[in-house]
Image (cartoon, helix red, strand yellow):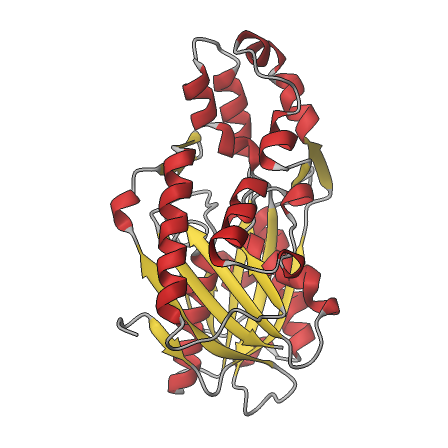
Amino acid sequence: MHGNATVRYDDVALLSVASVLPSRVTTSDEIEDRLTDVLKRLRLKPGLLRRVAGVNERRNWAEGESSDDATIAAGERALAEAGVDPSRVGLLINTSVTRKHLEPSVAVRLHHGLGLPSSAINFDVANACLGFINGMTLAAGMIQSGQIEYAIIVNGEDADEIQVNTVDRLTRGGLDRDAFMSEFASLTLGSGSAAAVLGRASAHPEGHRIIGGVTRAATQFHELCVGSVDGMFTDAKALLKGGLALVVDAWKEAQSTFSWSGMDRYITHQVSSVHTNAIVKAVGLDRGRVPTTYPTLGNVGPASIPITLAAEQETLDRGDRVLLMGVGSGLNTSTLELQW
């Protein structure tokens, strides 16, 4: 298999994964109630979010909660579960799309909040919904090389501002169906935080071995999904088509190096029922081994994979093979195999 983005590891393990979810639940019906007039004008039937995306509800941060504080809490939980003292962490990578300002990095506040040592490298990695897997891959390489002993990968997302701005814009009127549907994906977003701790497998036989994976790009599609706090504008059909082609190509290429047809669990990026069903069909996954969190959490961006893995971990047995499958707008895809 060609390409420098194909990798195997022989001494890296996932030691823990944890999530913290907002306490406030926002149903899809509540969002559509705010859009009643525009839905009627465009002759779109109620229940659009549930019917088209399969998203029944999502979480939003309540008063007194924030994505940064929750991410710190998730990190503290992950470190405690891994049995790793913060003083031994050599790397923190924040992979959040959400950020309150351009600089400094979000990572510096999380580094401070977690009480990590001055020697711990910290920075942000931004790659849309693929960021968490990218962060895990970077950390695994640094552990494998002996540069660091432990790494913590974190993510915290806050969908409130983009959804409020989107609903406000949609209710002003003057939009046709195509314009409305180009912003539909913003209405499926949810909030949440997650963290994972990585270390050497030889020092942690109880850990979950990171076997390796592949990363591939199709950046000719970089304009199909463009977002900011003001809104996210998506050519959903073209994005799905391009994303599926990229995933299938990467999957086929990987077969010369990896065997992923009989995994015990496939943890995919949580977008919608359409996206999940398309991925399952395109690469022939066993639907019963593909857990979903989007019906109750929506699309939590890069946090969706670790949140879903955290929810599934109690159902996994020692030795189970788990495949993390991510796709990020742009387009990029990355797949990472774990042995539980």
